[in-house]
Length: 311
Image (cartoon, rainbow, N blue to C red):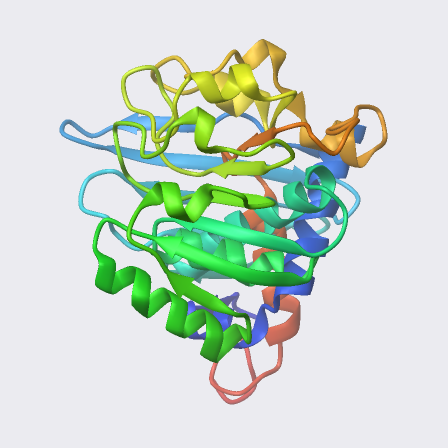
């Protein structure tokens, strides 16, 4: 039987937030336990850009695979999954949705582990796909009381707020500045492409959990270095990947706490309600492979796909 070929429409239709969160949580725990391999990214230089690979192996699930994306033209991403029992290619997923929803799910796991208990008031800086999937997944772990969002283009922030209300059923509004979006929030998500900080560290209230998704190297960073000094703990989903950036990370990687260790009970993300926590998302390798495997299992035998009886 040929492998299933799945695209963005399949991801939107068949990957719900709860499944995505449970799947990436299991990979984070497996990596901490040593039953999953998730090495740093491999970058193939292609002159004026790169082809970048992340790979992962999940021993207990008997699968392995890779994700490939480029820094040349923004081409479609590709994830391939093999069955380790017989070496057969079982699924190939192409497009942008899987990676974004994987990142959202990892962010939701971090919120559940590090934010203060209970419903959350969310502030978002950025109104793109990455910001959207953070909110999409967060609702699987916490009740969202309300959302405020700011973006460089106000019309995009307003559209994001309308979509959040219409599709996710949350109270949402756009605001004019990043400061207005992040002050007095329980959870702050920063999801921009900015090379300079879009907020000030002292705008973040005691007790806030911050997720940063965009640039975070010493020469390009969307949040200020002072944020780490205010934080009681800085978490990441992979210290190895954070250390493997082509340029040095803005924060001290050696002092970061592994999210998998927190999930396993071997480390603590928060010891008091007034502490600030920061999550530096790097996209743990292997999480997208696990999600692609879930999609493959859900899609097997459905009409219209390669590998199904009617394809």
